[in-house]
Image 1 (spheres, rainbow, N blue to C red):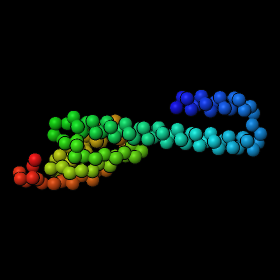
Image 2: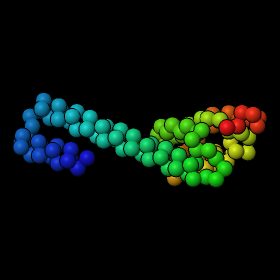
Image 3: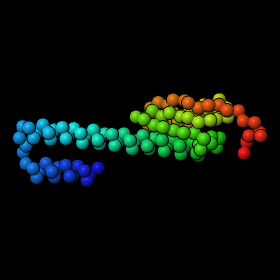
Amino acid sequence: MRLLLIFIFTAFALTGPASGEEKGVMEKAGKAVDRGIENTKEFFSDSSITTRVKTRLLRDDYVSGFDIKIATTEGSCSVKGEVESEKLARRVMGIVRATKGVKNARNHLVVVKRSLSTVK
């Protein structure tokens, strides 16, 4: 990101003052760069939230983090997968909500009672 900013400042410095029309184009380009930077920050922020949530789920002694899918958009986590009880679903959602950066968590977990013959 620093390299991008250095490039932009260098380009402005080398081109000198812009005329009225060029100024408008440069202003639009600057706004587009700002939006791109914000989108990149948001993407990496959401990715890091998802990683933190998955790590916490995988470290938990009672939750099978491999059975839980997490999708994060703008700090809001969508939690999907199968769990064996309501109690376990509440535990999963508690872990998700307690994770740094999570603003909201939507529960799409399905409680599935497994019989002994289906357990591998």
